[in-house]
Length: 116
Length: 110
Image 1 (cartoon, rainbow over the protein chains, first blue to last red):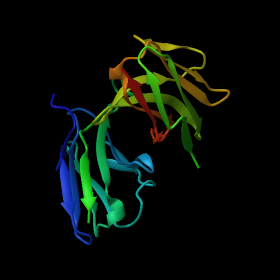
Image 2 (tube, rainbow over the protein chains, first blue to last red):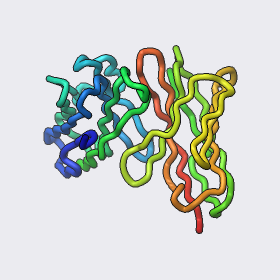
Image 3 (spheres, each protein chain N blue to C red):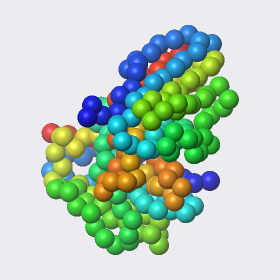
Image 4 (cartoon, chains in turn red, orange):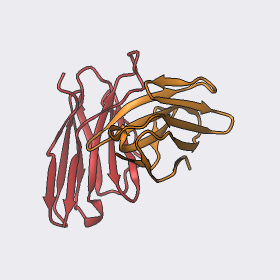
């Protein structure tokens, strides 16, 4: 398995632009998590899905952020409009609660977002 | 509000030293405590702890949980330069929500 796949790996955009981050979880995993990491705030959980259904989005900073999971193999995190304070590394992670290692989250390589 | 606090924030030691990283948590409906290692890219899983007093061990790394004091430690003995990384502690609740601490940045000097 290729692991969790995220795209793009890096994005630089100007304030006010729409940003869409993409994630393909590991096949067979039924949980998907979106995190944001900055030096100041560390790794923050934004939202997570179980069987494509959003379970907890309390970590989403504001209405400019939205996430979808239209099927088991794809999720998006959208920021519209983007602001400089959104600059961070965004990680996607997946796991399956039905396996022996059910607490082990597998992280993607991350998307480094810079908003100018 | 649920929170996970790690200390120290940063640590620099010489190769061969032993280090202890601390993690305290306040999480409603706590289920498990997780440790991750993050080098240049994404975090990788180290340990999952659910019971107090039972040490988990992997090579030179070990970890233990105290559910009464809401505390966990991660020990690394005979440190090597390859142990340099950010070590993340996270608490999971029974709704599958995971809250991470800010991490301890460990640097091992040769």
